[in-house]
Image (tube, rainbow, N blue to C red; front, side, top):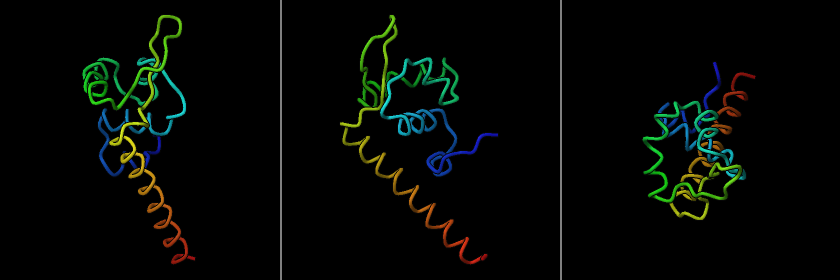
Length: 107
């Protein structure tokens, strides 16, 4: 079983959360929607249902077309996305602090 990120542990293991989690951690790269579904471990048909809302809210943006496939990435210029990334970073730091404290106590 794959280890869940702190983002998924915090907000729940739902398709939208898995997609956001993948896009946040892979924000420097762009992918076709099929690869996003595969890497986020979300059924392609499920992703197709939530994708229009992600585009409408400008959570994701298309970056280019490659071989007939439109590539997308998370829109880091979107203020809401910036806050989601900031929250993810905060959760990661808190998790690290918690694990360090726990390690000191058990040592």
